[in-house]
Image (cartoon, rainbow, N blue to C red; front, side, top):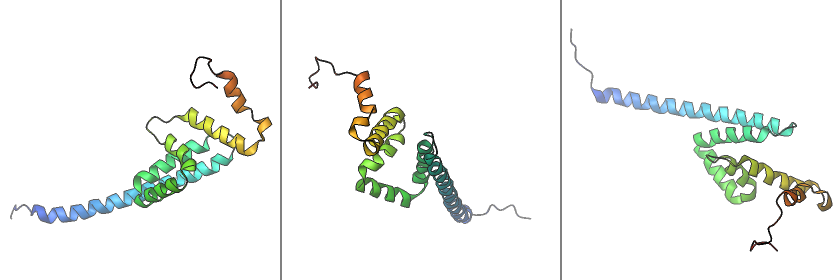
Length: 139
C-alpha cells in the first residue's frame, strides 16, 4: 500500500474549474434574486405608500453587483437619461439621502401632475425656510 500524495497540479485544475462554475451559478442565482426583488418593488410602487422605490433599489443593487451586462446597460442608460437615473444613484450610495430624494421626486411629480397655482410643496418649503436678508444669494 502506497501513501503517495497526488500532485498538487492535478488537484488545482479541477478545483479552479469547480470554483468558476460555482461562482457563475452563484452570480446567476443572485441576479435572479435581484430581478425578483425588482419585480416586487415595481408591483409595490403602484400601491399606496412609498415602499416600492427602496425595494426596487435593493433589487437593482443586487443585480448590478453581480451582472456585468446589466452594469454596462445601466451606465448606458445613465448617460442617455441622467435626470431619470440620478435619484436611483443617490439611493444606491453608502449613506443615501432618502429624504432629499423623496422631496425632489415629490416636487417633480407635483410639477408634472398639478398646474402651477395648485402646487403646495414649493410654497411649503418657502414658508418653512424663508430667505435670509443678509445672504448674497437672496434676490
